[in-house]
Image (cartoon, rainbow, N blue to C red; front, side, top):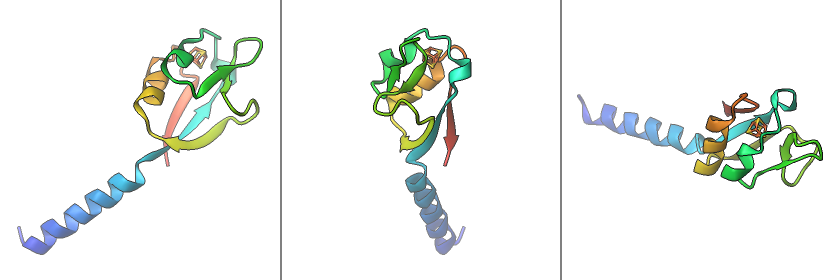
Length: 89
Ligand code: SF4
């Protein structure tokens, strides 16, 4: 393989890696069963008085761009009703 092709592939790989640092996180309150599990993984999540998930610093917002951290990924993965969705941005 020519060296310039390897170089180009590496550049593309690093560029894609850079832009995949963030993710779009969506809360779907209709699916939430108020189990309280997500907050045990990440402090990003909080709950309304009825136990339905919300962002800790904004009770209205349902979608935001955030850094892809292990704690949030674990919360998404372990939500039993898939009320937390990750969409690559
Ligand atoms: S883990 Fe899922 S179902 Fe449980 S409180 Fe969080 S968003 Fe709701």
